[in-house]
Picture: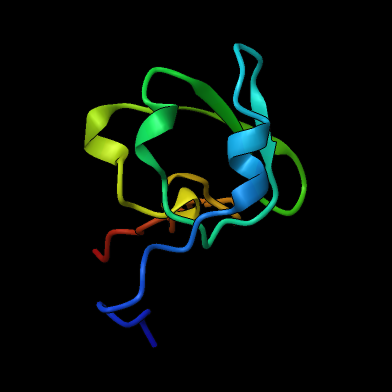
Amino acid sequence: MTRSKWKNNLAQTSLRQKFSNQTIKIWKKNESIPLFLIGKIVLVYNGKSFKKISITRNRVGYKFGEFTTTRKFNKKVKKITKKK
């Protein structure tokens, strides 16, 4: 279920207080990316480790969790035997 359009974007108020030249650590992936983080590097927690994300204009408005994967993709290849 998505957030209502008449409500503002979900943004942490303490995120504005941490705003500085340092990298910011974020644990909540459901927050939207605000404008004041353009050009900054953000560390987003994916459940195991922090993933580094650089914020650009194209990423503003999306959620932090859309750019961090939580699962590891293992590609399994089946060996195909030719029938004679």
